[in-house]
Image (cartoon, rainbow, N blue to C red):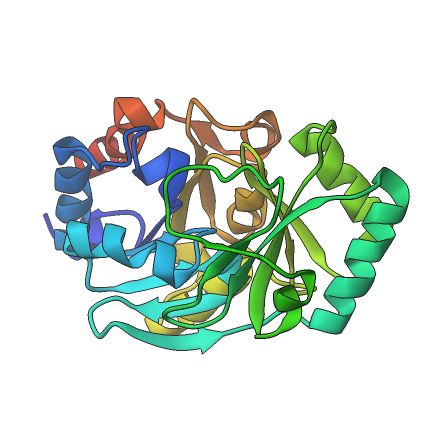
Length: 269
């Protein structure tokens, strides 16, 4: 198949709940479909909420050599060179104001934070329920939260749901930070104006590609800006209702090779 026969020049895939199955693997079928699409002239960019240190091992396992957008758009990472190309950090003073405003509305929060850099640690404070088994460092002193540049702060509340906490946080602090809901138990405070679309547009520009060239796959509300940027957005069957509502198409779930289902159909045209 010639490059011109494949209708998109860029395939942007979220990682958790989208490219990765629930056992944190990528199926052979999905690997083969992506390889065929790339062989037909498309580029593949992973676009994930995970910062680089939590993403590298997945990319290395895939044999992925291209660009990856990490940290909800904060980082553009060259996987082949193991090099961080761009990085946006959170204004810690604004983040402190945002946290104070949110806590004034809902009471004390449980906190974690992602430090900037290729080897940036994830600090986890008391009461914060970590999702998954990725490496973290205990946050022993509250002041340590602000001692080094951060990509994001994670917040949890003892009684509010993720959707409720995200909504209250936007209302209370949306003028100081961006608020993203990236998965179960994962509400994040990000640099103002930052989203997956920001990082994806930067990475695409490096490849000479545009929004009109792009099909995007995702599963959570933090993928909404990416869908708005791309010419086509495909939600997984397991996607959050907010993302499904704005998707151009809903495919099978991440455990049922939803990305492969779509790519195989495009390759067969």
